[in-house]
Length: 124
Image 1 (cartoon, one colour):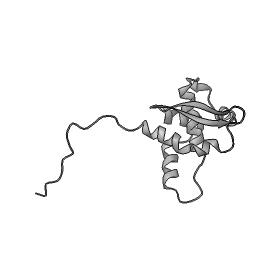
Image 2 (image 1 turned 30 degrees about the vertical axis):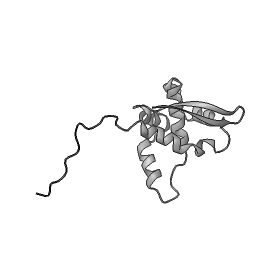
Image 3 (image 1 turned 120 degrees about the horizontal axis):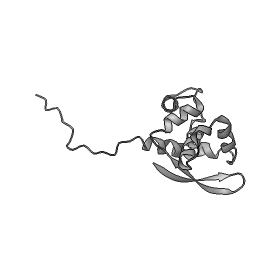
Image 4 (image 1 turned 135 degrees about the vertical axis):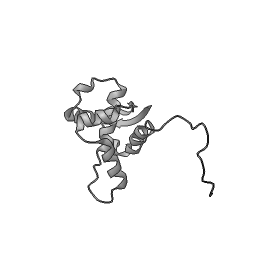
């Protein structure tokens, strides 16, 4: 899935950024950050303690932006992420975390429709 989201940068003010979630997004996330994206998202959703990694959305946005801009994915690393994140104003990425996660998870939904309704138990 592709989406443009306007984000505030330190130097240019509000600016549109492209984000693309594909089947390789989770793989690329692990390649760059050495963490399993789905485990982090599950922890974020189910966590009631302070162990949640609140940078998951920022890192996910970085990967999806790199995919949208067709960057050489082999050159991405933590330093490239920090340089990219440094352009944003304050907590801008954190404020849009829900949009990034929704875009990623939306790309994982099936678009196929069942041919017939699911069978219901008849009670026999």
